[in-house]
Length: 466
Image 1: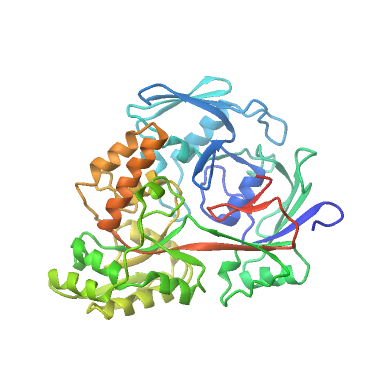
Image 2: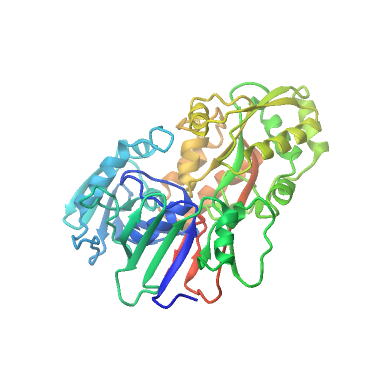
């Protein structure tokens, strides 16, 4: 049901347009980006598809790539999108910092890569090594320009911005006549309970991210409910450099000691799925790995700990949010570890940006809750796992047998071979976990009935006309 002037009103947690050279995993902002802008490639539910880049070609060794821009791609002020716009975006992103003031890893990925314009509408990339994962990285790059007021809102997507009040609302109109609905109003409503109330009271037709309601949802049959497992991994870093969890058997013991699905069921009302490796079921290689979560078994955890000298005193670090209910989850983990003989205390860092910076500086205690958001298996392994790279979020994990598997996956240009190669990496990480694997949340959206054009992406973003 859309109102008489063909306008759909949606309640989101946030409404904002970040600087053009800012990448984000915030699902509310991704929802808005997908409407107004286009990524270079579209990643959806584990598949890569053309978007702003209409097609691509690479030479046999994977070191030379050409990317063709969609011929009719125009910004909302009428200017054609050209290779120069993409080059400017890439140059900006390589020199930018993330939400927490830390350098993006993109500069590391592209350190030896040369981008240029092969023609006005063709982007060229040369790399000394095969770089098949560039397409997944490109799926995070949304191209836009700033308007005369300096707002980064000129995209090439299906909707143009008509009015924007930062942190409050944005009004969009469809670029093409055949797009339905013709108009969208996105309202900011920071609390999930408030978003649901706006739907119930008839002020909006769609309420997003209702999984964040404190109490269990009623799933009232008056509304159409959509649920998707998210690519996000809620996990706890284990300090692999020193202390108890520098021993692989202790890390394995921690995974057997914690009933992750029980945490999902009790703390998140069943809206999630226990993890089995460093990425979600949507990631490249997961299906090929054919994994199950490590079995909950206190007896096995105790036997493993006995082999490394028994329990120890540990520090568990946590912020108050990001991930949701971080302290409550950490308390549950500590209780579980105590049941197998590990003593510990919790240290809370209320400043979330500083917490991220501390983790980046390896100031993590013995256990530190975090979330892993990239939908790229390459990025997770590069940033967090590989001891060859020692990326931004690496916490001392070193498995010499894993590194050749990662290198093989990175070099695999054939899609099937790459999936199999990444699957071997993920299977090894199931057997030798660097983290305490917890869960992947489920995203929940409710709407009035009849909105068949709405969908939820695996990244948790609301999709329209996809």
